[in-house]
Length: 121
Image (cartoon, rainbow, N blue to C red; front, side, top):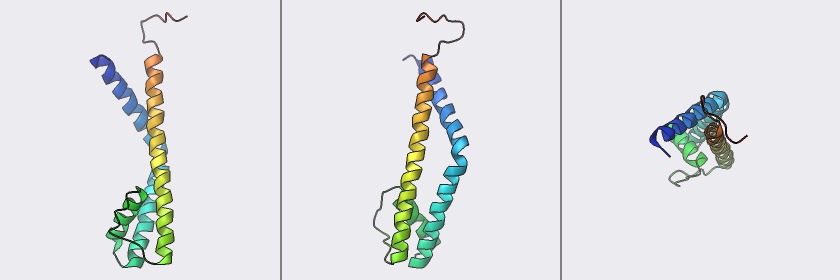
């Protein structure tokens, strides 16, 4: 791929990704706020503090789970499971946006440019 063509592909991908983020931002932000809220609740109930609870929520939601903070109460364990599922949904949504942007890139590559003839007909 030539330098100019690869730059065009990158720009098309970035543009499609940003368009997808623009459309899905309400859902993404709601998921992030939901996860942070549950983390704050877990942090307060477990006695860790709000900041540690939010940290726990994002580490758990990204399925990293370092194990430095472990919920001990039944309520917070259930909330941790919900946080984990919301993280899977968030990751799936971001992956779907990336795939959609890649599809837009491949479509843009197949379209003939202005001023050129389509010889496939």
